[in-house]
Length: 50
Image 1: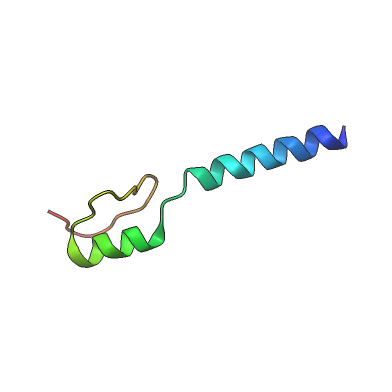
Image 2: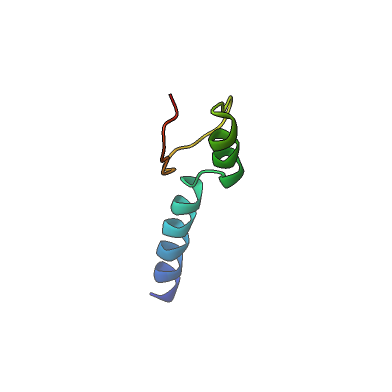
């Protein structure tokens, strides 16, 4: 039972990390309004970026 609990916790944590964006990509986008090749999935983007 302990192994199943550990495995479940590990998989949930791994999935959360895999879906995280790179903060330096978000900083680059906020400064230049350009982000070629960036993955900003799940990033909260505020302001006018038009």
